Image (cartoon, rainbow, N blue to C red):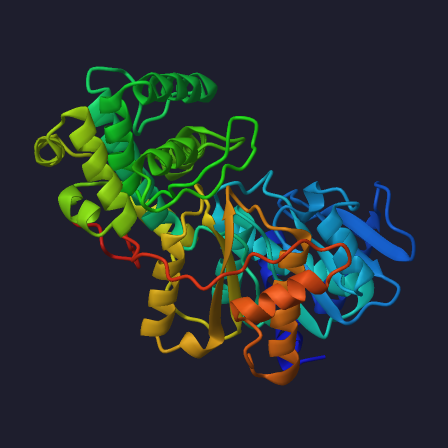
Length: 476
């Protein structure tokens, strides 16, 4: 058992004690309570696998599955307890000897700090049932990826490494400021007299989603609408690559084809099973309710500067589309500059800052994985995470990887497995030794049984245009 895991058991017991208000209880009595609360899983489990589940102190479900040939490593993540154990990735990792488990988001939702704390509490349940692991790895996808990175930051005594997949690593405040920029630009230039919400999302979330998607579809049918959609997407650092309404990926557009790039931007905004505009309505409504107000602002933001910093092929496409539509790009940028801006509620910002901002404090190795065409966890957010880690002097602990695919968290089983293999090498040897390079990750991905060709690629994301590292509420 590694030193970090030993410390982790103590840390997790302390966290669980605080959660249940039994500050005077001994570690032994807590472990006994946990064993009593656990039960065998009420789901079909693979052969030669043990499985326990139960509820944490805040009623969050948890579940762990352990193969008979357990290799000493456990992967812990948000949403595991909501997934079927016959998921190809879960099945593959259990077959390789990994224990897997975690929680759900059903109780915590966007209370990110509580969700990260629950990973520690869930790990303690694992220890009570199966004994201490040699390596505990925080690893989840989407919000689970963000939680994995927060867990690495806040609980290095409990976890030995983290592999965040497709996480919003710009932090809670930064990523929602970026989403505000996109929706504000669309509303200002395309629908200024409409009731389409930007903040203060109504209770009828589905109605707001459908209203936005219908409005965007109408705009996409005109040259003027297409040009302004492209501008909003470039300002908000969305990908110019998307999926159709039924989730089918489109070919990656040629960087020199403005029409294809614009179609990709539109699909990133409004296409696929999880459109950007839909998430911008539903999750913002939840966050505003939790935070007690609006945590996002664009006061003092220079959108002309943000366009100038966009990917070169997107800037070129915007200019070309504006020429085709007979529009004046400078005039639209002046309109954005002159429109009344949105101020944040300081208390709401403070709430979101407490629950999910990255500080650069990293003491365990982290390998991030992100699609370059992810419309929810936009790839530029990975640059913000790298920046704060490196500025804190912790860059040696971080490696970042990118996958050539469109859509949110659209990895193959082999690509996921490759990332876990790479972090295990780092844990066993203390060195990365080139294991996180695109070439090596593709080799690992393609070695899995029945694997497809690996899609890891060399990539450098654009500088994230709304970084927030705390105490930066300017002009609101």
